[in-house]
Length: 140
Image (tube, rainbow, N blue to C red):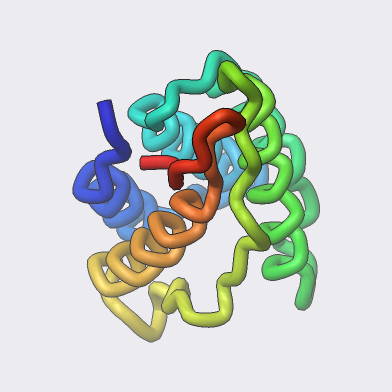
C-alpha cells in the first residue's frame, strides 16, 4: 500500500468546504483525515490509531490568536513520532512541519485551492520520514 495524495486532497477539500464550527470538531476532523491518510503508509505503522489520537489531543488551543502554526507544528511532530514508533523496526519521524507555504485560508481562497496546497505540504512533510535500520528509505 502507499499514501494516497488524491484521497488526502479530496478529504481536505471536503474539510475546507465545511470547516467544523468548534475547535474540538476541527481537531477531530484533522485527526480523521490524517489517520485515513497514514493508513496507507509504507512501511506500515501499527500506531495509526494512537497517532490519530495524539494529533487530535495536541491540536487543543489551535484556535487561539497567533497560536495555530506553532500548535500545528507540534501536533504533526507528535503524529509523526507516534507513527514512527509503530513501525518494525522503528522508523525515523518526519522533520519539522512547516505551514508557511500552505494556503489554508478558505475565506480568501477556494476549498480546492486550500486543499491542494495543504495536501502538497503534508505529502512533502510525511515523506521526510524514513524507515529504520537496516534500510533508510523515505516513507511512501
